View: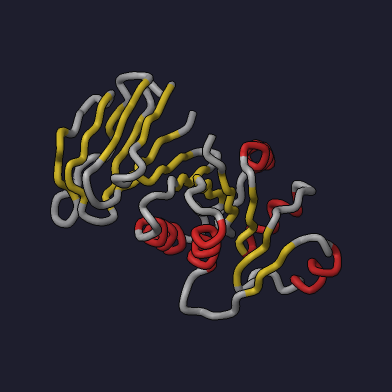
Length: 213
């Protein structure tokens, strides 16, 4: 079974239930700067705290309070904290699945930036953004999506870069080897017509958005 790394960013914090479930399902957990706060509120510790830590002015107190916590403070400003965390994962946890909490909500520019950062990450990594109200999964040629048990759910496809050979199965409006992106954007407000939905592509990257509930 493929291993999973949990990243918690400083966006809209996950509920304690979602955080605890994702921690229990993961093999390694990383707090990304202010993403440490949900761990603290849940009285849990990640394996690693990483980032420029400008959202944690008391990080020295954190070092003293949690001596067993591994902390990597990376002050350079040429990359976002999410990029720093992804770089760490690709250098240390080869081929692991990545679950991202706290990547949505609060500032829209942060959400868009997070999606852009994820879109250019190594395509072999399965990257999922989870939230209490929404679920987003990156689809690349190396990481097609197989979604089970969501018949009747609303689903949208968003190409962040040009995508070719986009194929779907189990949706109300199927895509059959489509090329999307650039001037042609389709795929919003589709619907799962089956409890088994598949999305794949030949090149590029798109995101599948799924409403919860």
